[in-house]
Image (cartoon, rainbow, N blue to C red; front, side):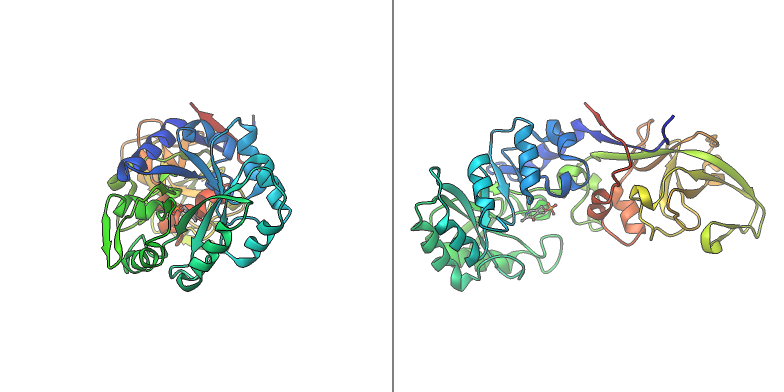
Length: 377
Ligand SMILES: *Cc1c(COP(=O)(O)O)cnc(C)c1O
């Protein structure tokens, strides 16, 4: 028997979450963001659940090739554009749309030989200061692109730094709107947080009105069932469901006396007799090593806590708390690290991430290659 840890990808939840993002911006088309191997879920594993999207957005040419290999003939967008001139040949061959965020990318396009002009998304740096042309240089970039025979349609795009909380998106909306007001083309502004929190809003700026959902939304984290603005809102608030369950089993138990310690560094000391379970899951599986004693975990569907340090292949959990809830737990019991347990109980990945001082994004993306993934259809 293989080691009992397993990740399950829930196709129906992906479908549900994508539909949920669409209801927040009903007039927009939706990119399903599948960068970072679909946030750790696996591009092939999520494809069935997300094929109802209008396109797939990602970063890596290899990942774009994998989406095409699955038979996807619709739009694919490279969110960082190309990294060197010859990547444009792959774009032509695979019919990839790509972001243009810097002059170098325009230089490469100007020299590119293609029969089929490319669809590009011209990115504005509206305040985040990562990628994109400043509002002052945006129009010149657009004019340059528009003059190139290698370029077909130009769409306009930006990315928010604070869509998940204060100070919000108003300032960037105003900057983008003012600098693009008379430029033609479709617009794409919103990630998950902006879509769920503001997707239907129309922002009146000095230079006209602009819907936050615009023409294309770009939901990532929400389609995987995590709340983009946790802990202000949780996944229940947004009506999204976990797309991944990480589950394992208890492979040993120990009876502790008061004063006994657990694990490396003896970081947990029992203050009374208690029973603990040893779970086949550790940081080499992607479980966060920083998760302290008290991190939530489900045993036979009952919420309990980790005790002691996370080690490479194991964590230890409090079984006395499960027995107090009237549920038997011991050798072989089912453990849910995040996601769904068998009797309908759910442990949101955000709860685990929060306890470990990180975000759901990081836990998903860290799922280790050694964990077998099964797709539930
Ligand atoms: C990753 C990414 C997204 C998706 O962000 P979420 O917070 O996961 O919804 C959207 N747009 C761009 C440009 C991105 O890089």
